[in-house]
Each structure stands twice: as C-alpha cells, then as structure tokens.
Length: 283
Image 1 (cartoon, rainbow, N blue to C red):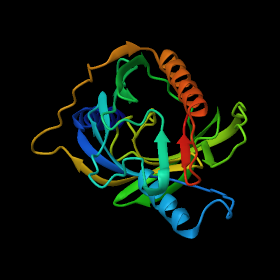
Image 2: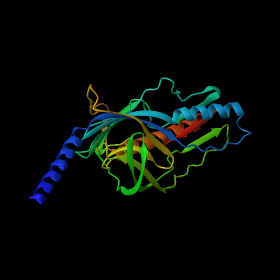
Image 3: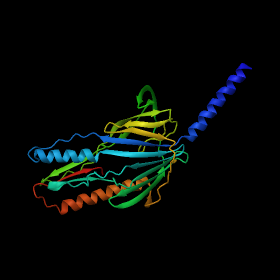
C-alpha cells in the first residue's frame, strides 16, 4: 500500500510539473556585447579619429533584445535604439554590418522543429524558412546564479569562421587581398535555468531543458537582464510573414554575392581623400 501511494504521489507531481511547464510564458530581455581587438597604424589615424571609431563600434555591438516565449514558440527581436549610430561618422568613416536590419525577427517553433527568420539585407526583406537545428549540448555539473535563478552549465563545439571579420582601409593604394576566412573550433557555453522549463533561448540558441539566460561563444556574450513571467496582458507571438521566402543556405549565398558586389563597386569607383575609412563586419 505504501509503495502504491508513493508511486501515485510521484506520478501526480510529475504530471503537475509537466502541466505547469506548459503554462509558462513570458518576456525575457537580453543584452549583447562583442569583444573587439583592433590594431591600427598610428601614422594613418590620429587620436580623435581612433576614439570616435571605437565609440561607434562600442554602440554598434551593445544591443538589447526581447524574447517572447511560451512552451512551444518564441520570437526574438532587437529593441529599437534611437541613439544607435547610422554607420557613418565624420571624416568619411563608415561602418557596414552585413545582414543587420532593424526589422529582423527570429521565430522558432520547438514543437514543429522549424524557424521563420525575417531579415533585412541592405533594404531588401527576406523570410528564411528552414528546420530548427539543435546543437548537441553537453550538460555540465557546474552551477551559478543569474539574478534570482539557479543556472546550469551546458557546452557544445562547432566549426566557425571568425565571428567578427573587420576589414579596414585608410587611404591605401594597395588592393586588398581576397583571402578566404579560416575555420576554427569554437566552444559555446550556455547557462540555463530549470525554474523556467522551456527550451528557448536568445538568437539561434535553444534545445536545453530550461530557458537559456546567458550564452558566450568566445567573441559575443548575451546575458538576460530581466524576465517577466505570465504578464497580465499575455504574450502575443506572431510568426513573421513578410519577405521573399528562401532557405538558410540560399540566404547565405545571396549575402555572400551582395558583399562581393559591394567590394567590386567600391574598388572600381574609389576616390580616396586621405581621410576615408571603412570597417566591414560580416560577409
């Protein structure tokens, strides 16, 4: 009788936790920051221009996002920043970030194992529809607290090119070398909490048994700064519908072609005035 009572109680608690997990919905706010290590020829740039460029880059890569989620779906979007630089500074200094539109939306459906990513590529809207790729996470024993949540560590490795490829030209008469980016093994570390038992996370990260509150790939870190669970107004998650429908592979090919075209146009019609500079990130 005691064994039957124990089994009954265990099953009750199990199904209760499953139901509560299905009821979880909320809005998480994340802040991202990217590491930068830029070396420049001091003869080509004065101190004021160097400070201006570093300030622009810092603003460009300190971003804020919201993640709306329920048990099955999530929607990840950058928070509009009115103080965000437009990419052009004084003295002809320009920052070009490939595939970094303000209207980008990333929808993930865990149950149906698919994504819909609305992406603005230099003014043209694409809708990337593809399967949701889940990394092979390794669950670690290490824990730490992020705010009021106890988090567990998880890692996986992947092959990647440099996550932030920067090409700088300062009134150089020499043509830039066209070199293919080298691949290297990259370790991604995430921290997730079982207190919010949904398989979502920021950006392309998901698939852990709890909400991912922090992730770091060695170059970029994303940290959750605020969570609102079960808000009074509910959580409205709408799958993006706007844009030309393509696969992820096709979109990557289009981006690569666009960046090559921009390189060719710039090199064929370049007129240096001694103060021009371009920093290209991505592509």
